[in-house]
Length: 321
Image: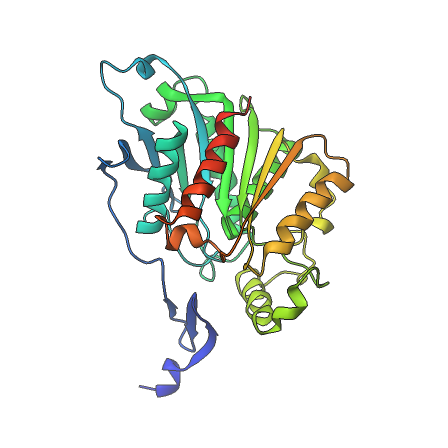
């Protein structure tokens, strides 16, 4: 056997390593926890197939309902969530995302669909965007109560729909919001999107980015790795400033969450500026968590700042509409 086949040709630690023989070693986000009833949050979950042909699936979360609960006859706001992981690691089935969705569903009293899109490099971008849009069309197929999933048929309120995601998932949520605005999603009223530590970038340095040069290469190499057909860091897929459709974002409210120590923080603030600059007609809120880094709430979900972030997201969703 040629030992060179085991040579690492691209090291994108802490995400993954690519070997000369084509093997992809994902360094995190490979764990899987089964769907379940979680007694701590009183949330139940199950897994569904969206497209067998394209291997798209989701984990659905719902507050536990019982015969004595008046919520049985009520519709619930619907949250569609897109996980992060640089478009190449993590799934809705990992412990971190399962726990986070349990918490957010319990606190906001929503039904949530956590999407499992195909990941790079086996499935390079724009496949994740295509899968996410297919997932949204699948969700929308339940509007008349005759979709394939009974939870969504019975409990989803399509007048109160939210998209959210973290990091790469926030990037996806943003693009799905634009696609709703440009193409429409019949029967779905997108109230708002929640973008947590969004993976946006650009060729021109802004804010404090130039001071963190040791991390710039990873971000730029990662983008070219997951999207090999890209024109670079000013691709509209990664740089909202270059997207002529930004002003068509198809929701009424946006919550942007940033973290003080996150390299991507300034991109979140700039996104807010861009929406104001182009005259987008909705309401933009932004919250910054002091002393924390990228997606800290997933790695340390029981810290005070994670609870505070969860409360801010909950307030945004429950006070909308």
